Image (tube, rainbow, N blue to C red; front, side):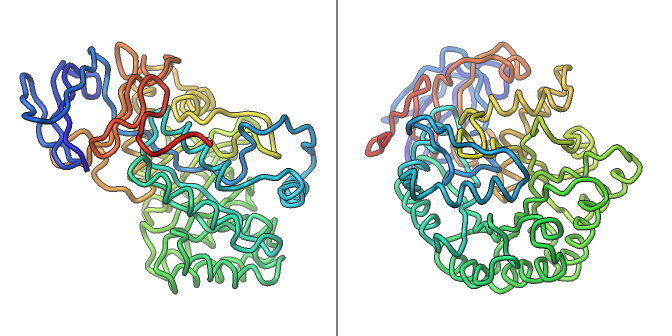
Length: 400
């Protein structure tokens, strides 16, 4: 934890002021503050926002910094999953090295918290989780990393995966993952019963990938809601993608969203351009806690993406047809404080007593900051400057 005085910044694009940090917490906000022996930084009038939150990504998959991969496949989800699982070892995809590369670039672009899925399967056992735990330890104090034990190759269709998930949750994973219980696992009752049993046993939250669209996805979502209610896990269940909430039947969607909000189920969206994503505006208006994420970045699945939450915010904004300034401000909220709330990080705000996690951004207003493509002037984690002008400066950490 650190002491720091940052002068001449504009919290949430407000009036120019100073922020004083003591022991990693925001101790004072005002003008003409004195920091005693604390280091002093000049923000030069930049906007300050809470640290950005990457609420859905796969640090263990990226090929960033490796030779160009020309073996990407088309086809259905199963084809993509199989190609990735079978390509990891031949490609020499070292999870610790690659997740460090991805995570460091997220830090350089202003991210203070990451939720990342780690594949758990019977081919690789817990090795991918172990590599990511090394990254979490190496970046302690620079970024906070939640790890989801994720059955990417399926749970019920891959015997032995349940036992590996059980072991992963006992050995460092923070969240129970799931994947398409109906269309991929082919047995939604057994798949969801197993997922919720692991959550109850280990007292861990849940985050289920739900790509299933239309009525099939709605059916699975209703089964998830039933179990959330039955196990008393309100506030501890999240659904990633939730493409079914983007189906055309708006009356049906509205009823589902109402139930999602009542059970405090969190939704994590990546604004996937090729899918029917839920409306960010409708979710937020209903009181649903929403986070957004970059998903996979330049991996065996696809060549696209940047490890930058502001870049992802622009993609999500375009997907949701956001144009007005108030809509862009809502988008920014889901990228920082709202995203933190969705992954269970409390008090993530520029307020006295909060942890000093914030980033400086370019722009005249919050809406302008969302669309402005510029390096982040400064990134602060627990009162320590960890990046400047888009480059890591945290001592003891380097890009592999």
